[in-house]
Amino acid sequence: MRIIFICIISIFCFSCSQKHERQKQLKKMRHNIKSLALTIEGWCTKEKALALFDVTIKYKPIICVEIGVYGGNSLFPIAMGLKYLNQGIVYAIDSWSNDDSTQHLSYGGVNYEWWKDQDLNAIYKYFLMLLKTLELEHQTIILKKNSEQAAQELPPIDMLHIDGNMSEESVYFDLITYFPKVKQNGLIWLNNAKWTTSRKAFFFLMNNCSVVKSVDNGNCVLFKKDKISSSDS
Image 1 (cartoon, rainbow, N blue to C red):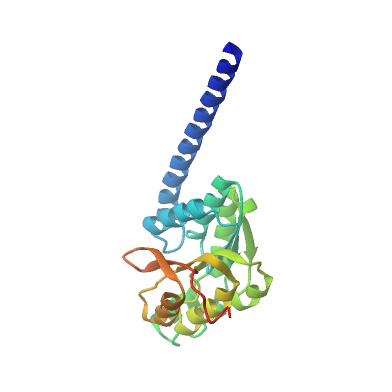
Image 2 (cartoon, rainbow, N blue to C red):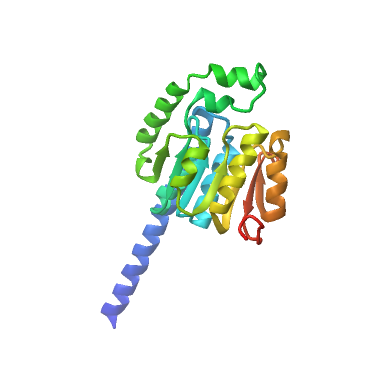
């Protein structure tokens, strides 16, 4: 009996030690995510970055997709969550093309001029460097294409992040193209949900999904595809 008792105690202590190490790893990763949000090219806030990471860990998606990667500051929290879980992949969809980035934007407008002048090839190289530095290559598949071209190469999706070209036409196109690919009870993040150009996509999701949470004062909303949609019937 004494030997059995010692074995049980040893297993319990080992389990506690493992749990403690996992908690330390989780705390370190959350700290790194907050730091990365301030330094990586892009517009992802610390609040959103942590939400992407936490939701990934909570729901354990196997197939994740991000449309609109740029420097990677919203993709890396997802990939880090998958690395922590030791499962899953995130598809990074972005053509890093000035033509695609300015499509449907008002010619001569502020957004058009800004995206026209960006050195997106340099941003792409920066993203690849960080992907390697952070050791997230095994969690990431890069599709260097626009969202229309990449759509045919994807398996059913557990979690989708729509953050590509923010013209009204492009946001809605990405949604109606990818929405049928998201599994029932899958998750959909809509970035810039308060923008006028996202209004049509936002109301589509409100009618066909339930809201799980919102971050950045409601500018990024997480939906769950848990209603029967006419798009899937």
